[in-house]
Image (cartoon, rainbow, N blue to C red; front, side, top):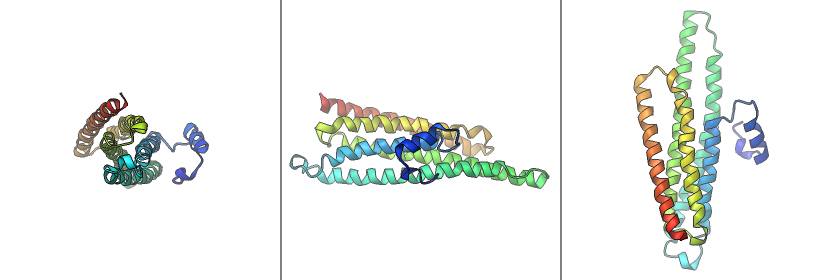
Length: 210
């Protein structure tokens, strides 16, 4: 299923709605975030190459390069998220007939749970990077398409708390309290930063649409 970006949109929707365990919420959040970054990229592409925007073109081209990197990173992370679930299930199915087997299984489950937490966090960070680009683009992009930069901000911000649910669900089973504490602190920071970037971007977009 790691080739999900090569499938038709209809097939992606079909498998997402099925009883297949992947793509789950974390992967779907990452895929949706790609659309958010794509909206910022579209505004950028409607800005470069136009005489009236030649003064801001270097900055917009830099933003466009950033959106491409964000989308590429999100694609990689979606594949990692889906693989992480498979790894967790492999650990879950490990034998537990002896004390040694039980310990090996528990160690594998703990490692898989951390991996399944780390990847959604990484997706949230990528969303934040996309939001930062949308915020930079808001005062520069083609005014005729600037509403789509607002769409980018809305979509990318929404994906942050959404994907973090896939991290939060793992925390009760993780015994490393220091790790859990670190994750809890970071996820709250990510959500707060995402909200602030969304609001700042939408404020500029609204002003330019008026």
